[in-house]
Length: 433
Image 1: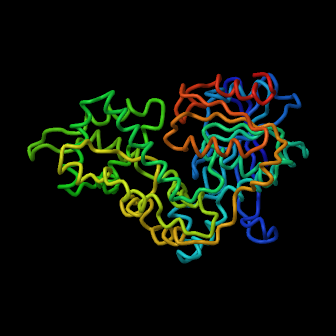
Image 2 (image 1 turned 30 degrees about the horizontal axis):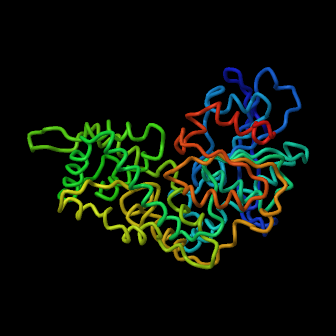
Image 3 (image 1 turned 180 degrees about the vertical axis):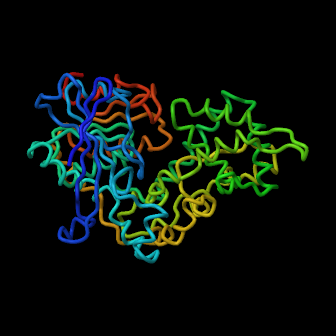
């Protein structure tokens, strides 16, 4: 049953689909998917081409726009848009600490989660597409991890696509997770150095907070343990357009004087727990490194192992001298599951996923080299989350793909540069730029 309703300038329709958990066993267990259709109010009765949006992550539901916010308004000028909650996210059958125990043991939970990568998401799209388009191909718009999924789409089912539009999401086709993080830590360090150059007063503020966390056991009101490593992970903000400013304002309000001396303020703790909690997107933490698994090697907590190769990120060593504290970025570690109450029950499941070696390939280099689908990609220069060198190597491996390399935007350029970013990419796909 579909339900339609209105927001300013937009008609929205809820769609629910039943798909196989394992597409290799179409008669087996099923899960539910949710997607929201959006069409401009004045075009609701028109036969428009479809655009399916795959958001970043992994582990996030599609954006909950109000009206024609961000890039959606531009897309609705000539498309009917499907905002898909990828499997396990949003209103699709959820995967979290409350639901996964119904699968059984941690081993059974981990086995279940092997079906939540890009290959399964693409096959979901291919089951959905004929029901909505009558069989016509559609445009995929992939932001960040959604771009990884778009490259998998070009590998597995290019016949389902009329156009592929990717923003900040060209993956390496063959890099192991270790390679991804060896490239990531120097980029993160550059972002931290740039932040301190903008806000030099934050050097001492960050060191003071880190010192407090090394000498006190701090548990946030939510039950989240604020270790110094968890505090450093707030550097994930530095990959977005306004993240440096947000981090600065967070640091300047960290302490308050109390009858017991200086303590971390309630306001600071409240904001930090919202930034660090995985309660709304636990799948991100569970499958984050599995998106790089495809070469018969375990990911084996790659971000944690590779971090040891960069001792400048060790907080205790930094504070023992006069070095600035380095924040970290988009990575998941074993201690992430120890600190976060939304993840603690899933630690063994995460360990089993990290040890898994039989991941199927996500990309088909031969098929990509023969690609015939019009494809375009925005590559954000020195993107903190996706390595530019890896992205451009992949761009050269996909036949006909056109890139727009820019340092005007950070990783969230689709949001902050709307509608200009999408407008340019669609024009490039039509060969008008």
